[in-house]
Length: 124
Image 1: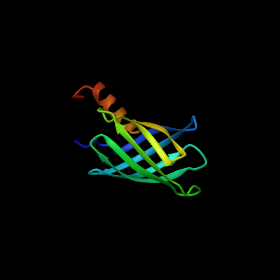
Image 2: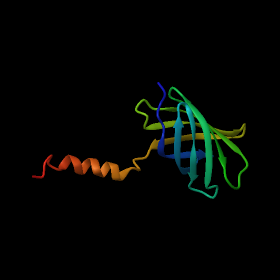
Image 3: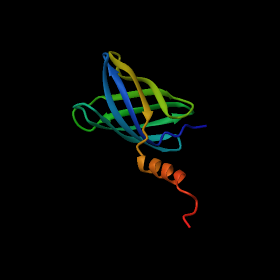
Image 4: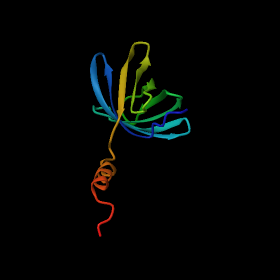
């Protein structure tokens, strides 16, 4: 069973104990991942490509401008598919932890569901 990771996630990675928030959008096709990441710092936007095998995730992150480094992320997805965590690594000297949780970005859909539950079935 492959985890379904498509959608928007909010995360944090730690570099030398300093946290950086990020937003990632995964596009999944089978067990192939692609997408975009936006870091909340000067590095800004990056693209990603990777894969999901069962509940194991791995992807490479490349910044669009600035850093030429490729950052490799590996991690595990929770059973409910709403949380993931793992390690990132640039090279032997530069690595750290990361985590992300699924974002309820589709607030309109959520609102429609709440409203439809409150409305009577017929308005006659």
